[in-house]
Length: 119
Image (cartoon, rainbow, N blue to C red; front, side, top):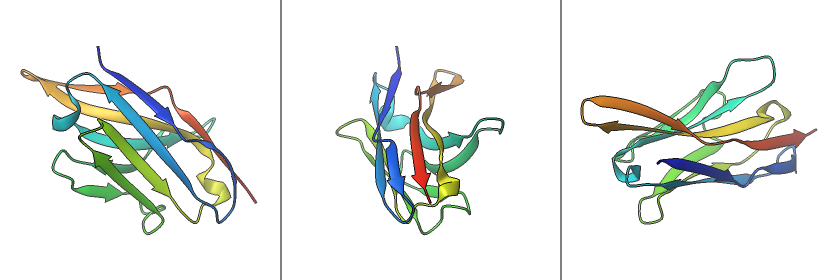
């Protein structure tokens, strides 16, 4: 059973920083592409950042230069360092793992962590 558990969300003032963590149980982490997504009520979930198993990263234009995704394979954990936060970054942030087992590809999701940025 694959489980993803996010932590690190909270309330912060605009211009502040937060660091999200996502711990992954199971044996899939090293071979997984990991991602952070976010969602606000009434809107679709949107991609924030991804990191491949080889460490290649990709970011949404809205967070480039402010957010950094990283992974620690020894700890089975992916991080999202968020700097210069804006009120529009307020959302529930979800961790995602995409991995293969045999001929199939799977997506697993965490339960989400709330990030609120006050103006």
